[in-house]
Image (cartoon, rainbow, N blue to C red):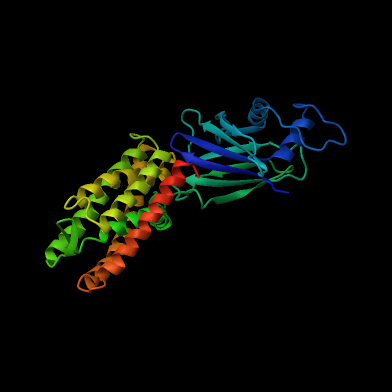
Length: 359
């Protein structure tokens, strides 16, 4: 049987407590406290309580106080029953400290389920603490609460945020490595840096400076585009990326892949890279928006995340450009470029269609 889980996210000026409560044990607790009717012996499934009943129960049985006993103000901000084939209710509670209280330390008194259903255990962890170097995905376990011990002191780790900044660099690296569409866009963008468009066809570009210029302009334009939109979206100046942005990213790959097959935007590749970079940056920002950081922390997180992205981009350029330079003087260069571009085009069309259908 799964236990309850309480994850604490420390934000500037408030905390957010995320509760994951097993539906069967929650129902038993509500029945034992008389908040919902007892279904009697022989029932085949647990009753589904009203959301308002669950919210009231949580607020009655969960308390947070400063070290001198002043209560924090709690409010349920979201509440969802288990999804199909899932077991846990998902409940988010915002906690606002009293004026003058220490925002890094508080005492949690927790009676949800564990007082009424035995042997339930509540696992308590800090899931986000920028100053303490904790970001989602690498929680810091604080302890477990049970019927005999229902109080715990939550203390933020001491630090400067540099550890969290380093983690953001790592997040940026893994985000782009896991994003096949972003990598496909950069690869197809680079496929033609060693070529020149003449009368609707590709020919070999023999000027090394021009090849270097092509590479720098395209990569720099893409970087500038996604950096600007990444920061703007992370700061919520632009809306969050949705289905439409994901479709546009697929289209960006299709455009650069088609261009690698036949010149459709000759001598405008940097503009294309910058324009589509704005679109890609909005998608990159999803990981940062979900952290719900302060303005200063968001800027720092964006810079770290973007640095991780740039490191991967530079690595791709460092690997791909020498190969393209070697290929450009080979007669079989088109037999390598065209299949790669065609494969990227097919993937892009598949991505666009599946995303439009919401798959």
